[in-house]
Length: 203
Image 1: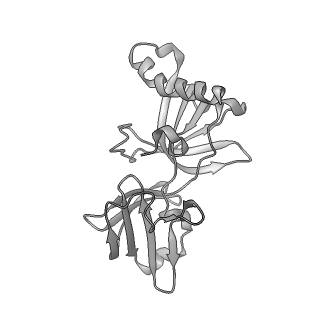
Image 2 (image 1 turned 135 degrees about the vertical axis):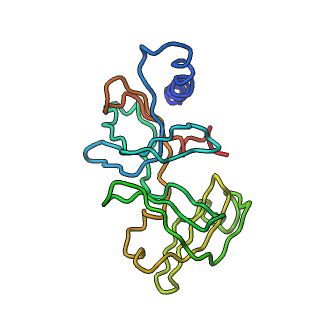
Image 3 (image 1 turned 60 degrees about the horizontal axis):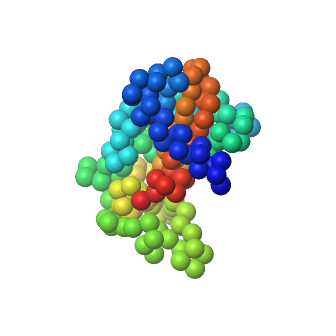
């Protein structure tokens, strides 16, 4: 527990240390995971240039791929990958990463249902009996609907995209974990933290 806490503290204060002039320590990269290869021990992410917990901006290309630390003490929880970059509920659009083009794709959808201010413990998104969050996205090919939940936005949305998009994998509609890593050599992470799965960052 102490080792995990120490590692967490280092990763939290590291960006501040760099700003204060400790550039020789290395660099920090932060973004949303689109691919995770456990066998190869690599992660690919879309960089968040703003690094603002409240207003991330995942629009940087090309994706960044890193080999992960071999030392388990330098690793946080394994990341979940997903292609959803942005859920724009005002314009009824969803922005996804398209692996075929290695770019972004904006999809217009038909809104079926939407509820705002949905807390993470709301029965809509949380199974109290099982004491765990419900699994999203929910793909209903018969009704031609997709249900997603954005924890940051606290929005539960049911929408219907154009028919041709239903052939895409479920991860298309899921948001990958937000991660932060520290590196000295390009493409080789020395420390890795899964922000989405670290209790101190959960709201």
